[in-house]
Each structure stands twice: as structure tokens, then as C-alpha cells.
Figure (tube, helix red, strand yellow):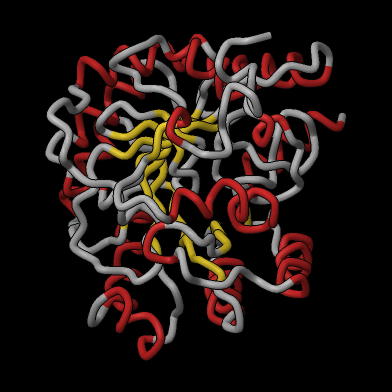
Length: 356
């Protein structure tokens, strides 16, 4: 009964059980977690481009630069989709940059749809048209979220661009009219929680899902403060009060809140680097150079990803922020290879380096 309850929560929070194969993968994930006590990949985040029309002052991927020659092709993504499915993945979330600036987005959605993923795009909405949404839905897109910082134009538009609030509300209407699941994503800032709360309440009142994120000191935000302890407690209270609100760490196959990075979720950049998520700019391998399974095993051997941290490692865990994000902030380019991280060494992390 507890599993059914969790899966209903999963459904309510947009990660829809779209077909029997996805349903089977999720049941297998629960079995592996609750019976075998093993992690199962659930979500793949993709970064097919880092190009973006916006200039958000807290962008977590600002240091990812297009200075590498090789980029993943649609054939590479097809192989990644197959390998991810074998590892249990059921959801693909396409981020950026701005994903609508990626010229092959329709093909990318179609590839992961073919391999029975629930396909989800997160967009700033600046390039959205009704025709574009219809094309993406035809390719298999199930859900699109639009990022926004506040429903107050005086707060949001200086960050996102003039008229962005009005544009976002229009995009929501268009997405609903053509039958896409949709909602808003917002980032919670210290001392300004009311802005995100306004977005969450709007979603609750209008039958939309809301996705939250807590600011993490990475990318352009590396000098930002994290939320206070009382604000982190507010986040937990919001989750109880607003059933349509979710965070990445709210759901897990272990039936408890925990950071999914490197365990149930990974991110793959257009250059093939495999990271824990958009808030974790440490690469544990490159898909061009070794199999996904080997990279997953390495990530799951990392001491910090082994932890069952009941929240977001990158925004809440002082040890992780100080010892692992801090050194990465000094780099001019992301991601940083695990081999080059001063705290990830054969002596400190023998299992990561294949030493048992």
C-alpha cells in the first residue's frame, strides 16, 4: 500500500506513469530498493545545449563552455537512451541552456519516447510558439515546465526579460490547450521566499504542478548564501501544505526523501560528461570514453552520493558545499573531472578509483 501511495504522489507531481513499460521500470526500482537495497537509475537530465537567450544572475551552468570538439549526436542519444533504460531510467528531463535553442530537440524527444521514457522539457519560454509546442507534442513530449522567479513583473522581469510574466502565463495556456502537462519551476532565494511561495500558490489555485529548487552556491551563484535553517524548514512545510509542489529529492524508490544525485538521477552534457545533476559540476566520466554502467558504478561508489541526505546536497549539506562545491568554484570551466578534484583522491575515495 505504501508503494501505491508513493506512486500516486509521483503521478500527482507530473512524473506520470505514461505506459506499462515505464510502470514496470518503476516497480522494478521499488523492488531493487526495498528488497535488494540497491539503487536504480530513475531520471536522466540532458543538457543538449548551453546556449540561452536569458542572462539569469544565478545560472548554475554558467561555466559550462562549448570548447570541446565532440558533441553528442542523435545517434549517441539513441544509444544513451537504450543504456539508460537498461539501467532502469524512466524519465528524461531536457534542460539547458535553453532546450528550445537546440536545433534537434524534436528528434531528441522522439528518440527517448521510442525507448519508453516520460519526456519532460524545462524552458524559459522565450522561444515558445503554439506551432513549436504542437511539434514537440507530436514527437512525444509529455510535459513542459516554464521557469519563473515571481509572478510580480517588477521582481521577475528584470531577471528574465521584459514581459516575461505575461509571456509565461500565455505559454501555460497554450500548453494546456494542446494537452501537454505543464507547470512552473522556481528557485527559492534567502530572504525572498515569498516570491517562490507566490508561484507555488498560483499553481495550487490553478491546478498546475510546481517544481521548486533551493539556490546552491554554484555557477553564477557561487557567492550566494544558501537558505537559512528556518527557510529550509519552511520548504518542508510547503511540501505538506501544497500537494502539487515537488523537489528532486522528495520522491525516491526507498520511500523517503533523499538527494537522488548519482544514485537515482544523473545529468549528461552535450559533450558526454556525466554529472550528478545541474547543481553538481563534477564529472565522473565521459560517455564518449566509457560505458554508462561503469560511470554509474563509479558515482555510486562516491562517499557523498552514498549518503542518504534528506534534501539537496548542493544547497543544504555544509560538508558537501564546503569540501566539494567550494574547490570546484575556483575552476574557470565546468565540469571538473573527479580525477582533478582535490577532495576526491585514491586515498580518500579508493572505491571511486576502482580500489576495493
